[in-house]
Length: 110
Length: 119
Image (cartoon, rainbow over the protein chains, first blue to last red):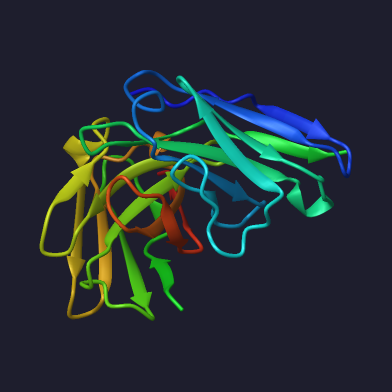
């Protein structure tokens, strides 16, 4: 199973919105609603931001939202803040008890 | 509050076996959750390695399955990882993490342990 495809970088100014895509296949993102998004600051462990495509864990700001269309999932960060600058990774269940991640997107707040 | 802490040698020689332990506190490791390992080579993305249900099934990344063993010691509340025949490509930060089931995301993570493969 190949990794999910993410753009290497994304950027936006404070207050703006930015969307990060995550493209898989009809064997993973396209067929399962088990897409998650993680935020990772330098030197830190990943933090769960979104699960089951659109759900936010308790404590995650509602500025973070997500969706899925076909084989592509998307994470949108609205009202960008300086602390949102981090790496973001998508993940999907890929069937046959297999889990795959995307290559990561570095989000820069200009 | 669930806490996970990885430990093990920071340096492993090529062709040898990498062994890591994850101590879990604040939660019984045998209480119905799935526990796993994820790694991240320096400057690169995340890669799922393996997961297990204590007393139940084990699940492995197909690309690593032939070299990986995941296990649990319920008496110590610890998760373990063994990766055989390591090469420089196995140099990474290794995280242990918890998820509800194999289809679920990882909700609690350890701080990670850097393992370097070098002679």
